[in-house]
Length: 477
Image 1 (tube, one colour):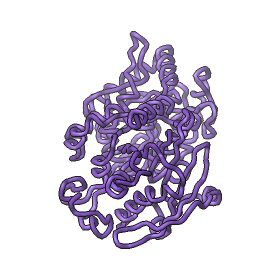
Image 2: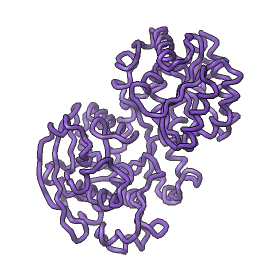
Image 3: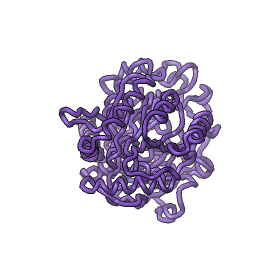
Image 4: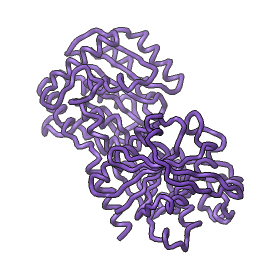
């Protein structure tokens, strides 16, 4: 089976968020299962020289952008057993950063069209093209509208993966002719039209043979208005082609036994070393040191969707009446950044607020904390809770999206479950859940059991990769 994974970013080459982690992990897991999975993404100038210098030039072509012809090169690099292709055009991709430019519609429609037009030069004819998020959504549109009747393309099946429905790629409708070069009938019939604008993601959904999201629960949630971002009606109409497959994490990268950032490496049989990590992190952050002081960690973008308003309403109550510490790492909206800075000022012996991002500190928080806080309002999949489980740090999550699929409430009577959960968007429910966790932390035997359950959780890509393969097989018959 041959699969081409089309994406706008991928670890280790370029990353702004979780999409890059998926693109760096899922194809590797597919290859391990015997699939010829390859990845194609833009050749950004921000890709480190160490990778750019290893790229092999494959071919040059021209790609139409409406009435204009634009250069497109393709370069190849094999990394960690996976073949990566890079679409080269310095006009579009030699810039600081990746997104947020006024011509993003042109840049990523060019990329989508180039992917298809470069296939003959790449000498790789996939059975399935799996495109991801709005940046690659038009691959499905161009395949059906511009390569119809070409026998080389006619058997290719398409999967469109939604990683976050909130970001849809919405642009002024006038790009239909001057940028996309498509007939207005595909706007007027509703295929691409969205509130009198062009919506790339809508086109990807309409023209895909199969649609996936990054968790089973999120696939259900987005068919309802609250989560549907005005696309719920379309998604309900395609529910028979919609499948949720929960993401995994790279268990070789996220491994407490080998993580180079930890003070002490540990595994499920040496959890006493995890406590040593806690004491060393407390020392690093200037907090009082104590192996028995429960440490609550949080690594997050500081935005409303992460449930920060719930935390704001209850954190004073927790810190005033509970013997615990709280450490935060992240950046985001200034109102949240300022609130957490003030929280540290008010509780200097209990709170460490770190308004920046550091992989080293993030890994130390995952590896050193007792509890990981992630009360998101919505979370398509989430990665933080799975890393926390891997490191024996017990997650407290709201039952939404991938959080619901990966964290199961601990039942002390049956010794089952790997974390703590609450369902409603309610600050008091969060507070009671935190207090329950802090109470049960005091029981060494009970806490050791839930840590063991957490670290035995299967958060690898192996299971998810097999679900993707089943779906691909279903598509190609």
